[in-house]
Image (cartoon, rainbow, N blue to C red; front, side):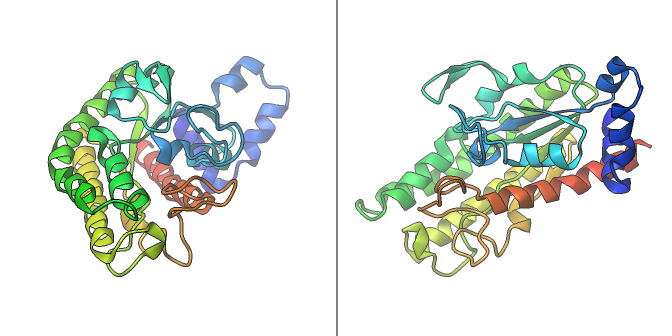
Length: 287
């Protein structure tokens, strides 16, 4: 499989592949040898980091582009969009102030790799918590935050089923592709204070519990669908928005380093590093 050659190149070095594309080989054959990678998901994928962010916030320094550059030569097709939920992957729906086509439309039948980072926007989960617990916590009571947090278990029970259905749809569209579900970088520490999030210790701890529940939901969905899961939440411990080495922004963001309550450039680089071994493992299984 084409992805296997790309993953092997990551381990052994890409020199031979690059030279093969630059010598007297047939141009059509060279084009066919380049693996196709499609990234689907929400703003934790699109990132708004780097150039070309546009309506959906797809920055060219998000983790899909970083992975594609690490595995060069590889073609990347980034269909992610800020605010997307599983419904936006599966069908045309209102998003980002307009009606966008289904992200699934960008998945060709001959895709080699599809990553999916989705789930936090289903049921308005993260948006409601972001505004109720963090952004507006200084001017409103904790009532809105409490309501949003209380709904999380019910919402995520439905989200699990939706993620499985989305993975199944991707597989039908691209039967030979390796589909990988990618988790979310954490915003809150497991305990303690995080004043940069603009919320009290109780709200921070409660949101940390929701983050953990989302990660568990994704892991269960991946297991049910039979696809690899990259446990980003687990591996980003110690890199929350209030850590010294933060991979996510709190309520402020430096220009060019993502947006508030979302991944920083360092976070995107970390997720890209987490994905690369998955591709190598995939290569070993396919030999």
